[in-house]
Structures are given as C-alpha cells and as structure tokens.
Length: 237
Image (tube, rainbow, N blue to C red):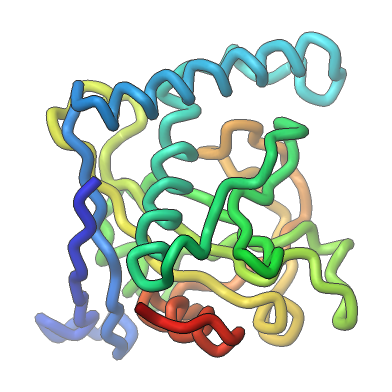
C-alpha cells in the first residue's frame, strides 16, 4: 500500500460555502490483483461469510441484505490504511484486535492497549465537499450515545476514512484509492460531540442507533492524530 501525504485548503479557490481550514490527510492506494490486494480480498470474503452466519442466528441482523465482498473490503482497507500509517510513524505500535463479534467495532489497539475504532464512508460529491463544506460537513462517528460517560473511556480514538469510489465500482478499479481523514479522541466526543440518530450505511453491519458524532470541521486531521498518539507517551520514529 502506498501512503501519500496531501493537503487540502478549503479556501483554494475561495468559496463562501466552505470553512477556512487546511486539512493534512493521507491518500492510500493499492494495486488491484497485487499480492497485498488479494490478501485483503481473502480477508473480506471471510468477514462477509462470518456476517452472513451471524445474521442467520440474530433477529436484529437477519433482515440485512446478504453481505458481499464489496461491503467488507472498505472496512478492511480502512483498518489497514490506519495500521500502516500509524506504524510508519511509531515502530510496530498498532495491531489488530482479536475478532470476536461482527457487531463489535474496536479494530486496532496500541501496545499499551489503547483502543481505536475506525469507520469508513463513501462520499458522492468529492472529498473536498465532505470535509470543507460548512453546512453539509461529513461526520466522524463515535460511540453509541447512551454509552458516553465522562469518566469511562470506551475507545481512546475514533478514526475516519473516506472513499470517493462508489462501492459497486470498488473492485473494478486498477488502483483503489482512499483517504485517512483524521478523527477524534474520547474526550472530544464527550465534550464537543453531539447525539445523532443515524444508520452508518457503509458499515458492514449498518445498525440504526443514536451515535455520538463530531463533524470533520471540528475534528483532528491525520497529522494531528499522530501528534495525539505521541502525547500518549509513544516515541515517534
């Protein structure tokens, strides 16, 4: 996977509909039919099978459409992108959590057991629209709103990934590109987040619920996430 830093200035060109902010993001890309790509497809197929098996025995899940590889691959790539980006800044810091429940959303952990949740979404109007537009700014999705307690941390970080390739076209592209946007800390979710009833439609298991969310315009960008991890006491490479 190739990782490329990019900057998006929301006011270049000047646009009164956009916020005044520059985002430092990471563009990730993987070549179709490479060994790495094939490993992700294999993992996505396995995950889709597990979701289908769970749905057969769960009344809350059995109404969902049959999961396909294209539904699972977004989450697989999102996790891998953040894993590689974090570990490119800190030596072997991030790793996957053991898979226990298709509805659980932990994804990664750091060596001192800090937990990281990662969610991915597809944006139809372009990356810049999603992160820069003031009124229709996309949301960094956090925990279920009824579990937010100031003194009880669930996950230390809630990270976001955006795809600008339609899900149905994802597996047809010669090069799949997506973007590590940034995210929010637990403290941010508690203090400046707000409750939002939504269904994360691009999630592998899209369960409707009340979530704590923060718009990207008020969240940390990818560079700031690395700085936040450093502030936890981890030494940068």
